[in-house]
Length: 382
Image (cartoon, rainbow, N blue to C red; front, side, top):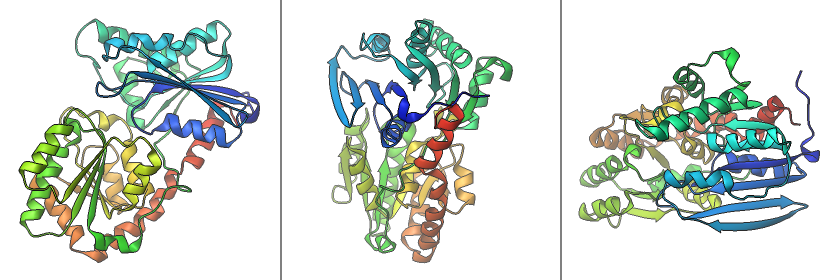
């Protein structure tokens, strides 16, 4: 039987690598909202184009204190700094590691009596993370260890659970108690798409600008739509190594007046406002070597939370499920087909309204308040 802790009498440390809003930020907000005794978040740099700041935030007695620590940043080599930043951390009731290195540090602190519980909350799964070599061997050892020795483990999808267990040759009896905690959305605070938004014909994209996200195909599809005489605009929220290339592609194709690049938007509330101003969201994932097959894509839940119907490729593990629920339309990993599917919604208001209505119902399944209440009870907190 699980020993239950009161959130209001417990202190929490949340550690992960930050780039965009995700489950660690949602957990922080939920704990603060439910009057946790103290919440400390430690956010390490993640991607090469990000800054070099490790951010330590302490929420206690209705106040927040933030400390920034700047160190050299060249991932994955500088991830080795993460377990030592900051050196001094107060004792806590529960330690949540949102990557295996963070969870491993929690195990070390548990051995020293600095935390009661340690939880590994995995946000993705990638086999052979750094290719063949020493770095991947170390990563796999750490990952396997925390899967076995943490007090609890969470994955974003059932595919993530089975894939990671199979990869590490772990049987159910060898792993920590595991639950699937999908990505969610703050439905009570997220602005919503209105019925009249269809007339604006605005497409939106949210995500990291890297090859596997397929934004190149989205830009090419926008050109096809323009050549067809479609009236629309496209707003792209996110940054990444392909930012300059995609902006140049857009300019070279004569899409300057139709496509707007917001870059990385730090405040997620601003992201939510941009999404809610659109009428259709696009997720044109590339099929080759895409780990979104093993996780639960956060941007899809952000789209649903804003009330947006979705056009996506059949890459995320829940793509067919979203299609069956009437909230998403699937396109091939091809600019022409992507343009055709988008055009079908630009030109058919009734079709769009049907999807929009379905989204409003389906989104209720992914309310962070419901997801996190259930998840924390399973971990022993109420």
